[in-house]
Length: 259
Image (cartoon, rainbow, N blue to C red; front, side, top):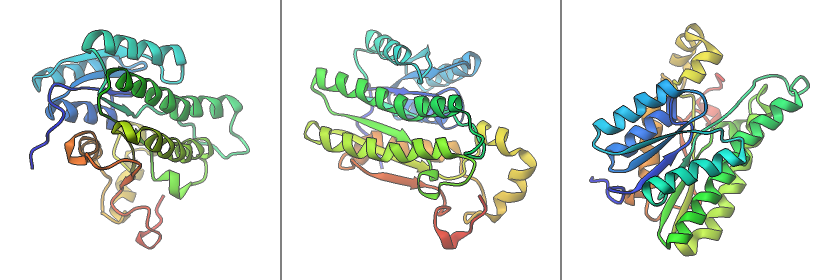
């Protein structure tokens, strides 16, 4: 099936230098979009993504900005609009997480997690919606959430709270923007093989645990990116206010409880 609706459009991906964000930026370029590549402190990796987008025959704009800082979000959109005229697809993937028991979590860690994962998501979506309404065009907003929004494991209270909050944010925006055909959706990845997961769990633990997952392995960033392309393109033209789990059945209670 041919992917349509993205050729010549502009997609903005936060946290696009590594893992899911990196795969998403590259996949959107292969689907025809020019891409704004956001990173916070990964200039070298963002440059690699820029090169991959160029190899796909599309234009890239790399912007360093912290999604937990309002002025940085504004700067990101200002530069994107100045370069490409507008943002048609906004994907909020940037995240922050500090794992600790709730009784030990610092207020600073709580604030930082919600600033990036929830407030940042709101700001990105709000700025994207304003731009789409200004230009009177249809568009797509996608939040990268997590199955932790439904499983809520221990030692992740701030991250779990932020991802649960994304549901209310997305569903509210989807309803408010439906009349303008601005689609708002959530993707809930399962356990995905990203640099961040390797940092938290380590290669040995992942190697030992992965075969016990329902699918027998971790998911890949590319598999999440494929779901983003579906929601951002005309393939998902009638999908809004949806939460799409891409987790190899991990969230199902009878499918195992290894995390």
